[in-house]
Amino acid sequence: MELFSAPWWSALLAIVLIDLVLAGDNAIVIALAARNLPAHLKTKAILWGTVGAIVVRSIMTVGVVWLLKIPGLMLVGGWAWCGLPISCWPMTTVASTAARKPIPFGEP
Figure 1 (cartoon, rainbow, N blue to C red):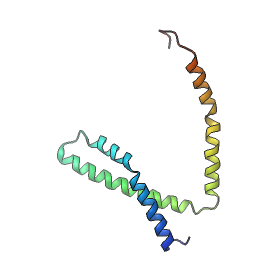
Figure 2 (figure 1 turned 30 degrees about the horizontal axis):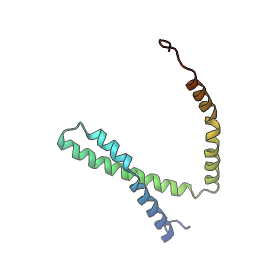
Figure 3 (figure 1 turned 90 degrees about the horizontal axis):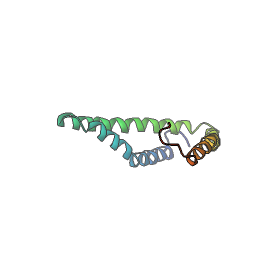
């Protein structure tokens, strides 16, 4: 796919739209940040928080589209994701062992 061609713009638009639909967590964070502000500042905080979130997501999306053009990057990322459960395995066994042993009252 050639840079700035019609398929490139179509793919970028699809990614941006999906990103914006899934941006509900940003709304929660913006609402929590603005909840204790006075009314005149609350609307500005919500507006600028929303604009900032959209701008940052758009820039990151363009960056990801650019990075995915690097040959083999998805393969390396896939191998990294496959290694994650293996690296977390000792933590799960320790946690399950600790969960089975009751701690006497008063001891840390």
